[in-house]
Image (cartoon, rainbow, N blue to C red):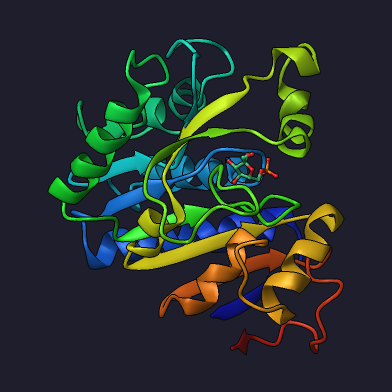
Length: 251
Ligand SMILES: O=P(O)(O)OC[C@H]1O[C@](O)(CO)[C@@H](O)[C@@H]1O
């Protein structure tokens, strides 16, 4: 695992934008695994900027998002489909049909999970998976205790995740209770992974990711078993890690 330090949120987003640009330069047909949440908004702004400057194109790429709330209409203001349209898809040149998210309204969610998993495989698997991290170490909606073998599945959200996401809803009661998420087994099959963290709220999670043991109680710890993971975190998120300035660490 490689750990890169950024001064702040802006710099973390710029570094992540360059990372994705390099991925698309190396392989314009990349299958990108995408994430939602507050952390990655800045990266999407960077990608839109780089695209508008003619520095990258998504016209041969495809994407699969990590997750979607279950029981939520595609165009609901809080759906991840809507988030992706607003922050990225509408502003760049992905071809129609190349962006995928789990169907949050699928009548049979279990079937939807296997369909999604099969689609990822048919596309050749994810080349680069972008991840945020929850304060409790969740990745996607894989909460503490989730088996590392799990593939795309329906989850019941924990109270702590619902609370963390309530800021986007009118009230805590409006946060959906379930979601469809890629599993940890799905995420680990990606050829490379880029995890981002910003702010003091993430400092304990980043410290545990870096120094802690690999355990299903802390889902992100599984990334230590992946051969190609880069973490970009800002100063606040790194405040509990022992390092000198901008020094790049590997472990
Ligand atoms: O970036 P945020 O908003 O802190 O969220 C962290 C993670 O939590 C989720 O929002 C899920 O709760 C993920 O989508 C995200 O990667």
